Image (cartoon, rainbow, N blue to C red):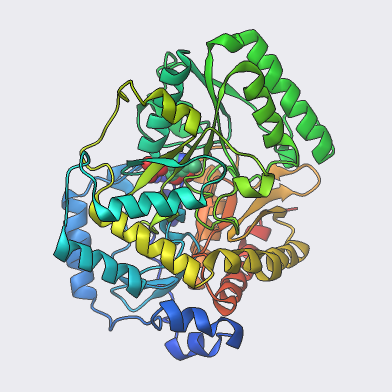
Length: 499
Ligand SMILES: Cc1ncc(COP(=O)(O)O)c(C=O)c1O
């Protein structure tokens, strides 16, 4: 029963399976906070708790959902979404008294956790003052959000075009590159996700593209580096880097560089597996773009705003793209917001010539107020530094320690609050625990792993044969360790399928 439900959700995200699990005592969680991280709770977070159980309301919420809500990426008749009663910090809870530590941050966007009081208050204040206003006007909170973002984006990416989310950011970055260069095609990587709208889904390099692929969208895919499953038979990061750059140049030569408007990459690919690029790769792509007059777009919708332990992941690699897309963590997703940060040169293209794009809600005041408050909270509470520290001292070492004890863990990779466990049947052959894009019985080992996580009070991020540890960037050490303990227990289930 469980595996069929799980498989109904297209294997991209952990399905909503209402497994029962014990309610955690709030005091146990509070006691677990280390002194070093209590300041994060006291500054920004309320004490996590769960409401009293109310299964009747939960059943009514579920019934209305099933009657009227059409869910993303799902076979509607086969899913059973968990009815959520509330959320706070790194936790959420249902109506039956079960509380979960959220190791998904929603869809990797609640970088400062749920219900941060300062962001909630900022949205309330903005709603009382000026709840909405059209994008053609200068509005204080919109100007301030743009200023705060531009201050943090690398290099001269100082103009901000606001969208409602990540896909629209990618759509508009592609449009800007095409108009700026006068060229038709965009190159993007396999093993990528860029959003579900027309151009963004065509640029995506995973099976979510297949149903929408027009094959005439002006998109060319190539292989980016990924040493663990190297498309280039490389044995070292240096080899992988060199061969991936040669492959990109070769693809470019046969496509005709003069036809390519942009090369688009996730700085650190997220949903596709959190593959940190080898040293020199992004700098090499930058150099190729410069040589051929191609716009370099970095998609930081998932990797941006603290996720990797820097404001933007590009900082790790010392590269400055021409366009940078963002969303999610910009305001922890409290109100939909995304955007494109634009270089001086590309912005100048549209100084005298109108930009051929726009959105009714571009720079919506409520979303911008949430962004201003979120960025201030992240700066005041040192959330970015905390994410880096967490990766170096808790999540990285803790996950590597799990890998030593669990034969199903093939590789641990990541940084900051952005980690993936590549689960395998066999460490020698690296055969994935389930086949690529598996469904039904073939996906049963991952479904069983996911169910075991939930039984242990952890809501896991699952994509194909991987689980990602992507909690809120301000999760405490004690909470992170609680998550590692739950993963430890669940991996025993995955181990049953590994040699
Ligand atoms: C790297 C990346 N780009 C774009 C998107 C699309 O963002 P949205 O779902 O807000 O349209 C996502 C969503 O997960 C993403 O991870």
